Length: 234
Image 1 (tube, rainbow, N blue to C red):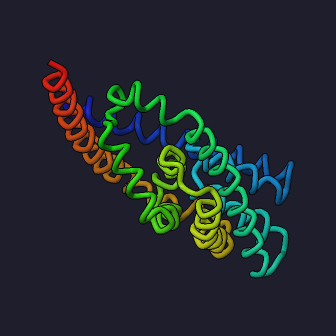
Image 2: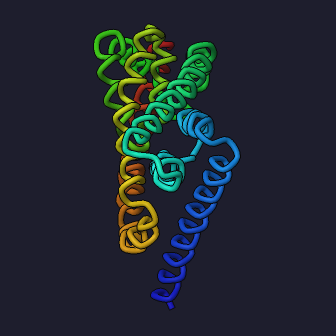
C-alpha cells in the first residue's frame, strides 16, 4: 500500500514537471512565432524577474526555432545570445530598482518572517561594496540564483552602472551557450529530454533536502537574534 502510494506520488510529480515543461515550450514557441527576435528580449526579461520561466528552455528554443529552422548560420546564434542578454539586463534592472526602492524598509520590518535578519542586511551591504561585481557576474550563470541576485544587489544599493555592466557580461555567455545548444540539438531536443527525464526526481529530491537544511539553519539564526534583541531591550 505504502509502496503504491509512493509510486503514485512520484508519478504525479513527474506528470506535473511534464505539464509545466510542455506549457513553457508551447508558450515560448507562440511568442517567437508572434514576435520573432523581440520575443527573446521579452521572455528573458520575464525570466530575470524571478518569474519561473526558465532560460534553459527559452534560449535553446531560440537557437532552434529562430536560427536553425530559419536557415541562419552560426552567427545568428550570437545574435540570439545578445538579445537574450539584453532581455536579462532589462528584467534585472526592473527587479533591482523595485528592491532598491522598497526592499530594505520591508526587510527591516518583516525580514524575520522570511528568515532574514539585520545581520544579513549588514553582511549584504559589506559584501556588495567589496565583491558586488564578481557576485553579480558569477550569479548570472547559476540556475536558480540568476533570477534573484538583483534583489540583494538592490537592497544593498550596489552602484547601478556596475550592476548593469556585470549583469550583461554575466548573462551573455549563458545565453549564447544555451542558444548554441538549441542550434546544435535542434529537433533532437525531444529525444534527449526523454533520456534525461529519469534524473528529474533525484535532482528535485536533492534540492529539496538542501532547501530544508538551509531553512532549518535560518530559523535557528532568526530565533537566536530575536532572543538576543529581547534580552538587550530589558
